[in-house]
Length: 311
Image (cartoon, rainbow, N blue to C red; front, side, top):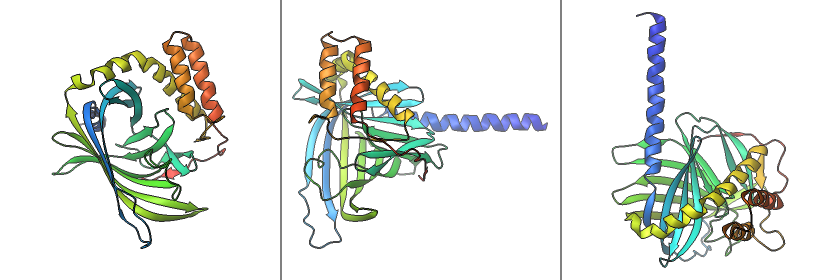
């Protein structure tokens, strides 16, 4: 066989392998979509300081609709809460990008800096976003298959979780160990977290925490109202996502103010959404208002902040 033919054959084999890696990951991520009964459980498990007072364990339940969208090489999974079968609330979202070369790393105090992913080949980067589509945390890893299960696992710094950021100020960073895997009834987000207090450049782990978010799949009909709500409101939130992506792409990082004139960002967005929903604002006016709102909350970020991020 000639050298040229050998090289072509090798190239096709490699392309097929890369295609298989992408396809497998995409199928696993898409399995997270559907209607779920979700239980959220958290328990502090260990503290080196014997005087530390463990906080009460938490357990809550929710009904959640997870629906996909596709933007280029990114799979967008939007989570929507269904409360008392009648109230619909846009919840968090997770984006998955294959072989991303860049990520946002949380450094504390509502600031994220762009980092270079050191080994992006065959990896998937998960980005978790707030209810107002502001960043929360981002991590990169491969999907790993063992005889027992297939899972994705990453360790990354994040802000305080929503369940604690209004209640606690004794730590500033949640170092999250995030494991996602499928099971017979749906999928699980398992967490091994460290609660870190920062003083200048000094980091101190004050407590460890175990988290278990169990998504049990049920009939999609149970989330019918969420499906209708999202069909009606998806265009507005797509505009929000696009405005955020433009701001992030143009900067070396993101640093946010928690409030502007006493109001959170999601409160401003609620006003824009109502005007859009009632037909009192055009698509162009809504886009402009959303962009200006994000600008209100953005602060100066470092002029250069690209560093290597190991998986």
